[in-house]
Every structure is written in C-alpha cells, then in structure tokens.
Length: 271
Ligand code: ACM
Image 1 (cartoon, helix red, strand yellow):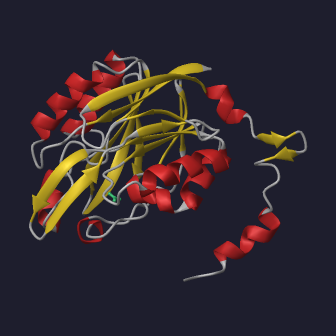
Image 2 (cartoon, rainbow, N blue to C red):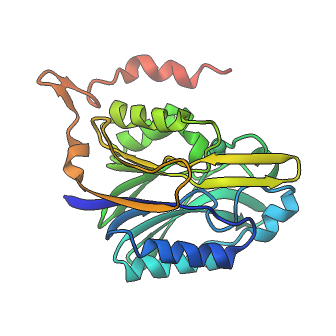
C-alpha cells in the first residue's frame, strides 16, 4: 500500500497551547496526506517545574482542546495524526500521544518509560503497546525515551505494526536517531521520529532539544531527515508492504524464527 509518511519538527513555546496549536496547524498544511507525527508534548512544552503545573496544562482525551483540534485536522487532511500531549485521567497525569484518523479519535498511548524528572510530574503509562489499524496503515506508538527499550518496538512489530510513530523531545545528542535506525532494521518496519528543536530553561533545568527528526525504512535507510535547529515538515512516499516482508534470506524469516522458547527467561529476570 502506497502512503506518505511525515514528521513535523518545530519549537513549542512552554505553556502556550493556543500558539503551539496555531503553529502546528500552519505547519501541517505542508504535510502530504498519510501518516503524520508531531513531537512529544507538542502543545504544552516539556520542562515542567511541578506536578501542579503539569496537571494544570494536562487535558482529558478526547474532550480537551489539543485532542479536539488534532481530531478535526485529521478529518480535514484525510490523514492519520499522532501527537504528544499531557493527558489528565482522573487523578493522574500521563505523558501521552493521541492517535486520530480521518476525523475519528482512535485512542491514546501513555509513555511507559519516563525520562529523568518526567517521573516527578507524570504517572507511568498503563496502556501497554497496541496497534492502531488505520486506513493509512498499521501504526504502533512509542514516545521518546521508550526507544531505548527494544521490547516496546518489538512487541508492536510482532503485533503487526508497519510504522512506528515516535513523538520525541530528545536531549541526548544523536543517540535515539541511531537507535531508531536499529529499531527499523531489527523489526523490518518504518519508523518516524518527530523531535522538537530549541532550548527550554525553566526552574533548575535547561534542555537543548536535538531535532534531527527522521523517517527510516525497514532496511535502515534514512529516507528523510531534518537538521538540529530547523522548523520543518518533511514527507516521503513509501510502500508499506515493505514492512510486511520479513524474509532475511530464502531460509530466514525474521519474525517466525524468534526463539520465544528461549526468551521466556526475560520475564523471570529482574534488575
Ligand atoms: C525524553 O524521553 N523526552 C528524553
């Protein structure tokens, strides 16, 4: 199946949801119809200084402002949008990504592996890893630091993901971009990393976000990429059936030959 994969790379302003949504809407006009990924926490910014602040900026899905706007855009664009936002659910706040496809809210993924002080503001994700089966393709979602746990992407690939949407606010230079190339190769899937740019200094913390958003093919080819500073949207046309070809040689099938009989030990080991 032919589709376009896109990322939006920009610089959200901390706490200014209206401005961030307005900027994202302008940028999205440049994306081609298909699967489009926006950064982690794109509507709030990243560097919270208290749990209270995160709770105040968080919103319920799908009735919050960010969700409603993204769902509406996905309808107008006849596309599937994946976007990071701060989600409030009863007394908890999650670092989440919403998935909206062609005017419909499909659900959220809540970040499983929280990075640094995110642990102070957010609850650990409880959604697990699921496939969003859309008209634009089968999409799995991980958020930023989840990349360093290959299990997350692997579970999604085994469950049939053709594309991993990876909203990010990366701060460790270049590591995740390399890592996501490996995630593509070891699972034979497309990956879209949509990272943000700019510096955010709040409270005791000052983060420079590393940009370099990228789209990687199942054979680890970087199809398109951004610089570490630019605000940009990039799209590439792909054939998603490439992600369903798991044969490495005539005699080796990547997925079928996993030795799950030997891997069971993973669930017993700790630390
Ligand atoms: C990160 O997980 N935002 C580094």
